[in-house]
Length: 88
Image 1 (cartoon, rainbow, N blue to C red):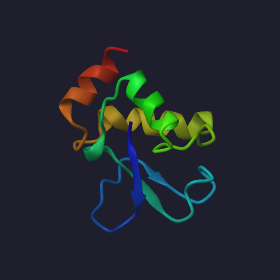
Image 2 (cartoon, helix red, strand yellow):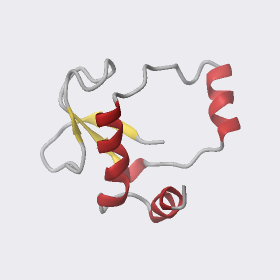
Image 3 (tube, rainbow, N blue to C red):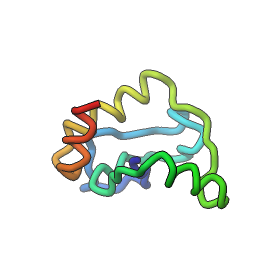
């Protein structure tokens, strides 16, 4: 799971997102790969069941590809996340 945060000069610019890339993105943003975390599906489901997580629309295929590609490109992605992702 990756975090989307507000853009600032000096942020990880591996994957920048703009208004229109997703309804959740309302201003220039970036994928905060340094905070990427691996969760079990049951933990994610529990988050939805408890109202902690909210269903969001899917990313468009091209935006999803940019986010996914950035996992292995960003120097900030935790190595355990990179290893897990490359084994999928």
